Structures are given as C-alpha cells and as structure tokens.
Length: 244
Image 1 (cartoon, one colour):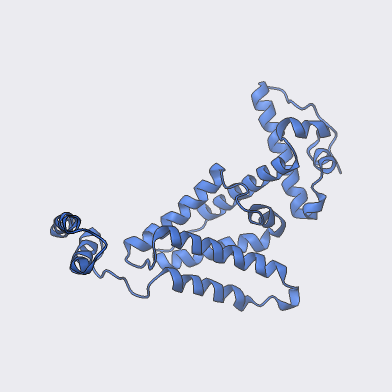
Image 2: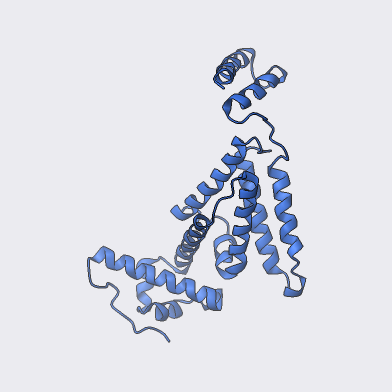
C-alpha cells in the first residue's frame, strides 16, 4: 500500500531532512526495481512508495536517469557490504575464486539491479562504493602478486576478472531457464583463473628478496632497458636480495 505523502523535509535540520528524503526515494526505487522490474520504476510509483509528492524527486535528482544512477550506487554499496561479510580464504587463488563467485551470485540474486549497475557503461562507477569494491578486488590481486601467482599485470587482471563475472551474469540472465547450465559459470570462472594466475608460484621464495633474485637472474636478457638503467636496477635488486 503506497505511503501517504509526507513533507519533503522531515523534522530536524534541513540538510539532514533532505538526505533522509533522498535516501527514502532511492530505497523505494530499489525495492520497486527488485520486486517488479525496471518498467515499474516510474516517477509516480517511486513517489507513492517513498511517501513524497512526485515533484520532490526532481528536487533531489535531475531526472530519472539521475535516480537510477543513485540506485546503482546503492547497489554497489550493498555488494561491498556483502564482500566484507564473507570470510577471506588464506589461499589467494581460492580467495579470488570466492570473490568471483560472490560477484556472480549477487548478480543472479538481483537481476534487475545488476542490469542497472552493469548494463550501461560506467553507470555508478564514480561512487565511493564502487571505488571501495574495486579496492577489495585490487587487494585480492595484490595478494596474488605477493604470492608469486599473478600471471598478468594487475590492471589487466582486474579487467579480466570484471569482464568474466559480468559476462557470466548477463549471459546467464539472457538464457531461457531451461538452458541455464551451471557448467557455464564454472567454466567461465576457471577460464578466468587460468588467464590470471599461475599453477605454481613464479617465485619460490616468498617476499621481496625472492622476487628480486628471480628478476635479477633474467635481467641481462632484457632489451627494454638501456645499459645504465639495467645497471641501476641491478644495484637495487642486489640490495633487496641481500636483505632477504
């Protein structure tokens, strides 16, 4: 049952009241999206669900696209909270698997919200919640690198992980239910693992000393650096290796 319209600014300070109203509108839109789909998120329906007059929405958002941007940010925040609530496996590869599975499960459980978040390029990606989620992912990738298990550079790894998870969810949701084979998700996840990680650590000794020794061993074979650059880098690597 729609709420009775309330004043646009609740009791308390005006900024606090505006923020409460804004949050109420976002949560109402997100709830409508989850229950009834994208077409149900109209100005009139959101206003009724939030208990405000329709013009109040446009005092907080430039247009409906601005509201959907805020709903996407709301979704990223919910996803980050879900990430933080899950225990972290000690093994960095298993941690990556768990994070990928969590991202896919979130998308499958919230299809309409996920389509708003990821169906359009860069929607909501300037939000603090999105950046927090990216920092969690980059932390997982750095753990892989520190363990000597990262096959590609960190930025490419992040792109591959994002692309495979997003592609898995959107492909799954596009299929008729009788053609949704769980093997699709498993295969895409393991393809990501193969592309991003190595089976064995590329550096046997953990820590910077082991990495320095491994890089020092192949440095003479590199042609990308000048002689002076190789000499300087060699001195730095020798110093790191000696401190191991």
